[in-house]
Each structure stands twice: as structure tokens, then as C-alpha cells.
Length: 265
Image (cartoon, helix red, strand yellow):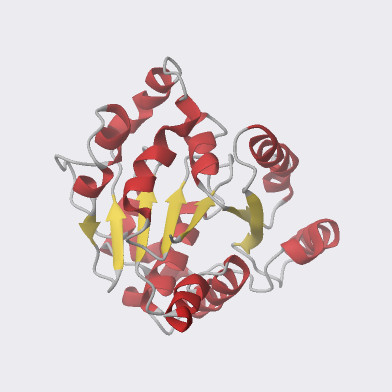
């Protein structure tokens, strides 16, 4: 079965959806069949992939109404990248989930039915540490954490690390920190440099070598319904996400299993 990654940070505005969409796109372009699951009611990942609004099947239907996740999958403009879109209805899912027995495993069960069809499944989590994010961590093997290079963005990072450890201890022993991504960087700024140095000093090798720069083309791409690889593949943002995707694949073993299976056969 494919690798499962949860892109998460309870703070909004740190480039979480941008990171999920673009690493998924470049992993798909590397030849790995990839599924992006939008778990954020804001639907930013869905918009960034050009998904139509008001679809009859989306991730809410899979979570709340037991619609098979496969029925909610749509194709994106990127070869080998599929999407399970979100909708504003997802904002009301957590109170319902809270009433269920085994509520932390709902998304894992939904995902298990399609996981064998993909070499990589990526969850774009909501900006919270609520039940949907916990569900994503329970279903995942690795957590990818985008962090903006500003001090306020660091405040909740320790809380997120504790949440990952609690999920690992109590619900999903396989969960590991896949890596921390420095986003929206501008190293001409002293503040950016200091924050980046602090993060690297504390988390050491857990921080990806590739940092994502502030780039207007990354900000423009969602309004055109395209990942950066289609909107402006030669922009600094595109090049950075391509390099980051390569790091993610190496760290998380994406594609390694299928290659080993091919050798074994």
C-alpha cells in the first residue's frame, strides 16, 4: 500500500494547503499515482486543483454519509494526481464525529478502501487540532508540518509536536514526524533568518533542507485553479516545491515499496 502523509498545522496562513497541493503535484509528476484529500472546510486545496463547486460527492459525504471514498475521487489537471474535494459542509462534521464510537478512525477506514490504488495519499488538514486533524494523523504514517518564518507561527509548534506524540502513543504507533517545512521565507529579512535558525537549531535534521520562498506566482496560482507546476513551472516557488517533493519522497519512502515489489517479481 502507498505512503500516507498528513500536512498539518493548527495555525492558519502558514502555507499548509499550498504545500499539500504542490508536493502532491510534483510527486504525481514523478510518476507516482497520488491522491490528495482535502480535509479543510475552506476547500483551498480543492480550489487550487480547479475542482468544481457543489459536487454531489465530496469528503464530507464519505465521512458523514458513508459514501465510499472512491466515489468522491475526481481527476485534476495534473497527470496521475487525483483529488477528493472538500466543501463548506465539512465545518459541521466534528460535532457529528464526536458522537461516534471509534471516532478517531473514521478517515482511516475510508482511506483504507482506496489506499492500495495509490503510491501516495496526502491529507490537507484544517487549521486546528480537532477531530478531523486527529483522524488524519491516525490514518497517516508521516506528518509534514509547514512553518512560516515568523515568531507568531512558532508559538503553536510545540503544541503540535505534543499532539503528534499523543496520537502516536495512544492511537497510531506508526505515526512519525516526516519533516518541518519553512514557508514564506525571505532571507533578506533578519527576522526570517533568526526564526529559520531557531527552528533548525531546535529540530535539527527534522527540518527539510528546501525552504519555500515568498513568491507572487504561488499566491496567484490558486485563482487560476492550477498547481504551480502548471501555472508557472519556472518560477522560484515551483522550483522550490519540486525540490521539496524530492526530499519528501526520499524521507517517506514514496515509490520505494513499489520498486522493491517490482524487483521481487
